[in-house]
Length: 74
Image 1 (cartoon, rainbow, N blue to C red):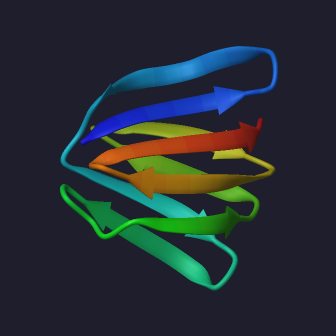
Image 2: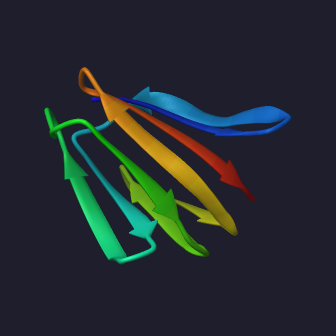
């Protein structure tokens, strides 16, 4: 899937990955390739993907057409 992790003033990361873990309000959420569309609120925690980790304070994630956009405050 295509992934973009953005904060208000810059792009944190953009690329391809098969799996990403998000810190959703209801608990940790694992997203795989071709996941169903969703919108989820994120809480303070780590976004984990392709051996990388990004710490966030909060945010929102939007999945559609095998593209995940994460808008976060770092």
